Image: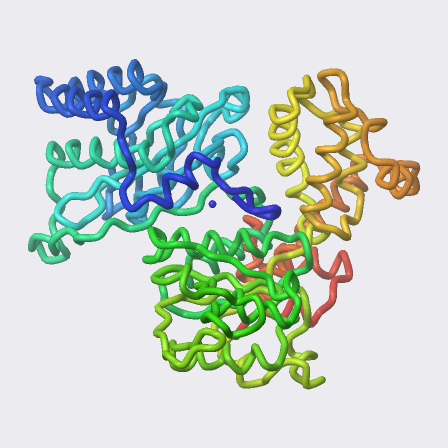
Length: 522
């Protein structure tokens, strides 16, 4: 849920998402036909399920599978059928974890790396036992006459030859067959529920690294805006992953099958930016020997991500305002008015309020862009995500550079957790890549880290903390993160932290946090 601050699914998944329909190879289609036969030929649904999942395991490496059913009256999720797993392996709850969220929302979720996704690990009773397995997870809703009656979770061994969109397609077909063998749910008054929707909902961008309160707030906001047509403005420091948030919005929107095109206002000189964005006609300027389409043309029907919008020239701002107001534009040197069926997502690391006050950014354009704002927190405000990010980048660059490093020493991890990260996740990624290249063993140690990190952490490392002091420091940081994410709402922050508002109020007073940030909403 790919991403600096958020980590994208692998390249195979992204390429498959760009195709109008996932392409299944002949052997996969044959396996799917056999699976359908096994599901329907068993004397019972349970026997058919086990036969089908065994075949899915043999043909496509689906080592574990689980069918969960919902009890709407009790708001619970039950384990119905299993393959390659035991009931004690799971602790499922409706609305929580991957299966619980799928069953509640009716939206599929893809997790390219289970051991790196807290939401996936949270529903496993012995999560440590799954850390060593290179598994991906595809979880889809089981729909019966328009209502979600459960979830089907299938764990695959890593196989780059099978894209995630293809796996999703396979599992959805299996779930559709299974649904035929389950009881049909009744509506609120005993009537049959509404007909099943004709369009399949987009699956969630699940492989997002970070489970801190600040990042969970970002995930929630992505979910709120993705399904709408609203323009989104993403704010955050350089290196926090603003582009990855934009990709997540696009991937979960109705435009997901259409192009995602990006352009940075800071990457081109002012004279070239407009030609890149709008395109040009032959003879528009010296060197324009033919017609060229712009990024708006390429993004037709999809999403245009306009990065560093705070650097946009005033002349380009006027033309962009017209695109937002009337959904039309003209190429440079042209007279034909073209329509733009494009959703715009913008991002900047600058203060837009200050830019409008200083006159460098048009106030009317800012209001058009600021329909829905998402602020990506800097890494220093979500330090609890550092270990997870380190694990991801360590594995990524060990594989990419063919190094032996598989884990990190606790002293090295301490240095990374204490550092301020002015360059945010991008700086962390660069530091881990450099350390992996420097490491010739299986353990990444403190001496392999960049010198600047080691020097800056000496004061913190020399300050010996007792266990109680370390716990208090971590608790204070978590409370600050939760308050920032909830905008000072004590009730919401206490739910995020899994405690009561009374206890949280006591902790706020204990750590002398700012009262204005802790005022509960009326």
